[in-house]
Length: 285
Image 1: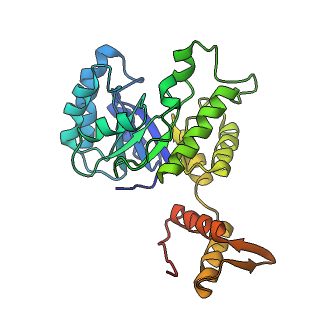
Image 2: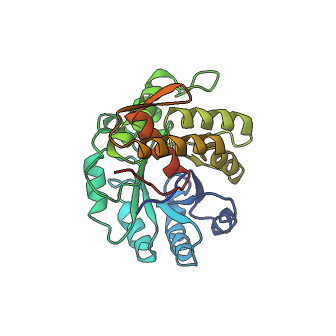
């Protein structure tokens, strides 16, 4: 049920023309949005448009962001789109295992779930609870817009665009919550879609910190995101050498490579990098 998720591009659910264009964006997945991008009176038509789009021949993963489970709209969203078999559901305002379990019970077949896990105050305290609930969990992602609005904060950002401490915390807990659950951590959007240099720096920090991919709000962002979250040739080659060295020395706890000690964490990191590069997991054991 896992899909490669370097880049996930939001597309408004009431804009079928943009959905068609987004197929050529190079994104690993589209998020067809029935929540924030669609005005309340446009949601019925958006559901029909998304369902129709899902029924067409599929070349990339298609996720649908439904409305929150407790808002009265999610039932209609699911009733409209589930017969068309989306690859996944993006769950806004998720609050840990309870939300994940509730949505899981409404799904059948191979439909993944990607929670947006930081949009309410209660959600912050549930970020360690996603593991072991359902194999549908494809990753965890976060957002820096709904949470400040929920608590009356003026902004989530400093003057230079960096996050203020409360939202640095939300980002970090999402990162660790995802890894604790054994799934991909997905970085949130970079709002200024014209600033590709700023996007590249932001995405690079995400990859450095342990995020496996990132959401996008504009097709122009996709190429930068894909390039950042695709391991480079030198990194792949080094990871192969690490795996090969341990394979040649079964039972070894620590080894030397290029004059540096490597041990179990290095092997685990190498295998994870090769997985992100799409290479098979070849183990010595």
